[in-house]
Length: 248
Image 1 (cartoon, rainbow, N blue to C red):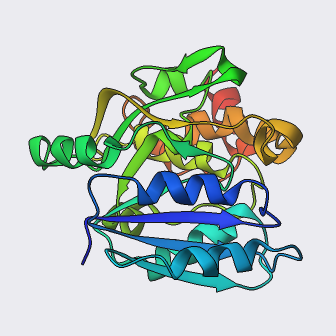
Image 2: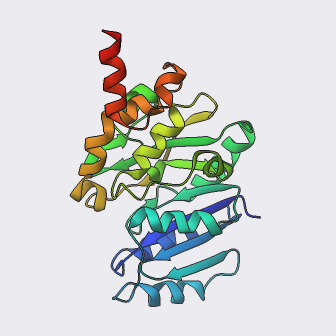
Image 3: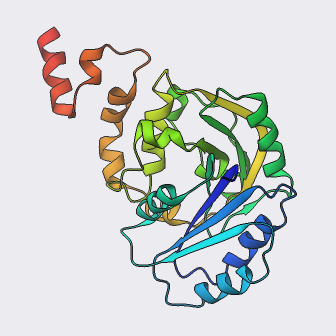
């Protein structure tokens, strides 16, 4: 059972995947496995992965290549087969910021054994530098934590569920709201740059209209720290409106 499972969804990533694989291999801490969930790439992505795998001797790489229903379907597949105690999701065009990131996070895990989420920062031209310090539920109403900055305890997904495939680009935002709104989920920020985040990915390019339409309701639904149980049981925004009208 490795400490980390590094999960990477890919699709036609031949031009970028070598860099991220190298940044993983160069980590000074190697108690991890790599799980690559490929969406049946039509380019040479699979060949690059196989050639890389032939160079490994300190950790395991597992590859799935089949059609999927999007990024979060691929990430959910990775979660189901992961053996690591902690899960980390990285894009095929991102890289670890330095070769001691996993070493520093392993230290943070030892110092915070009761935490379910440990997260830091990313650096990117998209954000004009470092993004974006400590978060709480209210800050998450305005902006999301990049999943490239977050390490999740695996059993958290047993408690909170998997990523919602309803949202094609921002299901990680939905999941973060779910976690940060629940007082039973313990989080810890570390002032560390975890990854170099590449602009131009699916979420930054296409957005997510379904999530945008649902966002205000999700703020209400997941806010278990301040709302009563009456509101937490609601399934739709219309139900919330009916209750508020009745209170007037």
